[in-house]
Every structure is written in structure tokens, then in C-alpha cells.
Length: 333
Ligand SMILES: Cc1cc2nc3c(=O)[nH]c(=O)nc-3n(C[C@H](O)[C@H](O)[C@H](O)COP(=O)(O)OP(=O)(O)OC[C@H]3O[C@@H](n4cnc5c(N)ncnc54)[C@H](O)[C@@H]3O)c2cc1C
Figure 1 (cartoon, rainbow, N blue to C red):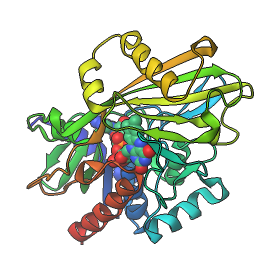
Figure 2: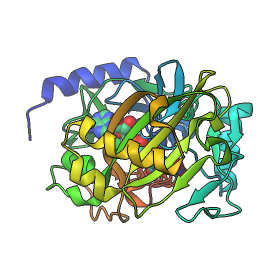
Figure 3: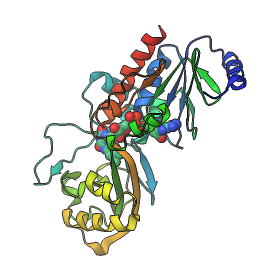
Figure 4: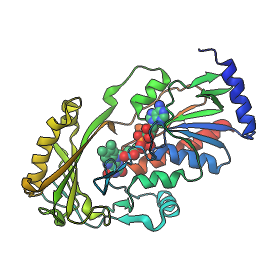
């Protein structure tokens, strides 16, 4: 274990200066699960600090401003099955919480999961992260590398905490724990945006999305169905490749994999290739968990949360955050 005496004493002093006579918790990751956990702990009176390695809140509930459009390039929408999740969303997002009205069609053109309501944030799904982060102490662009156990608590960066919660995807949480990697626990997802000239190009007006999980183009959605997001005179699609296609092309040049995805998108939505105007590509190395992971015995005071423990859905990630907060509170008495 590294000698961290001087850093500890500085940490103790800074904790004292912050008036931390209440237990403090470090949450690694400002995705939906980490923020859910941090909010619950903060509401219970603990001193919580969230460490986020990127420049944005929300994790895979991600949105990009692109060519004047607002496009969700991670979670496209979220379900609301639990009343507690509904209450939290209504409290934090208010009227910006919108329901997707147009249908999702499966590979045969039938309605996919009939009866299921799907929701999004009017200004971009990453705003859900921003809303949940309201009032929390968050260190942005702060990558946690080696949380270090102390005789009582944990050292994270230069600060001491009574407990640590990792919400990073499972392969990254394993690295934090110094355990061997398990790259097969998560599937990647190659994602692209394609812009076409004209409002409602092809047959985009007829459906919000097509789901065809067994095909290379596993998912394609028209973002024009989220009003106010796309500039007039343009139609924007999000295309997500299947896990098999994404794994096969993960390290390839994006031009190599986006071209066949675009060809499939154009066939699926009856688009004129001559109207294609722009492409954006993104590689999610850890997109979706393949099966719930069992963290096994963890060091005292170290907790795991997030979709790694369950399934890759925004609502499930939020629920794990609530459950982990209960565990942390029980541990801290
Ligand atoms: C392409 C795609 C499409 C999806 N579509 C949907 C959908 O339509 N509906 C739906 O419900 N769900 C969807 N999902 C799944 C959903 O987005 C996730 O299940 C959910 O957002 C996971 O939240 P999380 O908090 O568990 O993890 P994450 O969102 O991954 O949050 C973890 C955070 O930890 C940070 N982090 C990691 N390591 C460190 C470190 N060492 N130090 C500091 N910070 C760190 C990361 O930067 C990240 O912000 C989709 C996911 C993807 C990728």
C-alpha cells in the first residue's frame, strides 16, 4: 500500500475545514446511478463528493450538440415503471419530461413492446444528469485511479472518506479494485448520427425507431420525433450497431463501419443517399452489460452500483443507486 501519511493529514485538515463531522462518501461516476446514490446519501445528511472523469454529467445518458442539432447518442429514452422514479423525474425535470408519441417498429414492421411508454428530456437526455446533480458537490474531469484503503475509511485523490461507491461500468470498477479485467461482461456499441436534407426525409414521419437486434443495424431512430431538437430542413437519425458488429469493428476506422451502417439505414428508412449531408461517429466501449455481475466480497466500505449489477436501462441504473445508498447508510450506521 502506498505511503499516504502526508496526503491523509492534508485530507483530514481539508475535511475539518469543510465542517465534515458527518460521515463522508466518495461516489465515482456522475452517471445516473452515481448521481442517484449521491442524492440519496446527501438527502440522508452525509457529506458526498462525486468524482467524474469526463466533462459532462449523465454518463451514458448522453447528448451531443451537433451541427446545430441536439442528439441523444447514448440512452435514447427511458422507461418509468417505478413510482419512486417517476416522482424523482417529476421533481427534478418538471415539464421537460416528455413522452415519445411515435411508435417503435420491430424488424417485421410490428409495434415493438406495445403499451410501453417511453420518455425523454426535452433539452437532451443528459439534462437528466444535470438535474440529478443539482446541489451536489461534483469534481469534474477528476479520474479516480486507485482508491486506497486506510485503517478507517478510504483515500480518494487527496481526500479521505468513510466509504467509496463505484458506479463505473464493471470492467472499470474491476480495475479500481485491482482485480483482473473481465472485458466480456459488457458489449460495445458503435453509434453514428446521419443528417439528411429535408424535413421528415424518407419515411421517417411514420415511426420514431426501428429495432432489429439480430441485424448489424440493431437500432435506428429519427430524432425529429423529439420536437425542438433538430434544425428545420434536416432529418437526423441515430444508428446503433449490434454487439457482434460493434465488437468486430471496435478498433476500425469509423469510415469503415459507418458506411455499411448508413447503407442499411437508407434501405430501412427509404432514404435517398443523395440527400445525405453529414455523419458523426461515436464508439461506446462499454455500452451495455451482458448479464448482471456479482461483485462478490468487497473491501469494507467499498460499494458498487450501476447497471453492471442489473440491466442496461436508465431506470435500473437509478434504482441501483437508491439501493446502494441504503447499503452505505446501513454500513455507516
Ligand atoms: C448507445 C446506448 C444506448 C442506450 N439506450 C438506452 C435506452 O434507450 N434506454 C435506456 O433506459 N437505457 C439505454 N442505455 C443504457 C443506459 O444508458 C445505461 O444503462 C445507464 O445510463 C447506465 O448508468 P450508470 O450510472 O450505471 O453508468 P454510466 O452512465 O456509465 O456512468 C458511469 C460514470 O462513471 C464515470 N467514470 C468511470 N470511471 C471513472 C473513474 N475512474 N473516475 C471517475 N469517473 C469515472 C464515467 O465517465 C461515467 O460518467 C443505452 C446505453 C448506450 C451506451
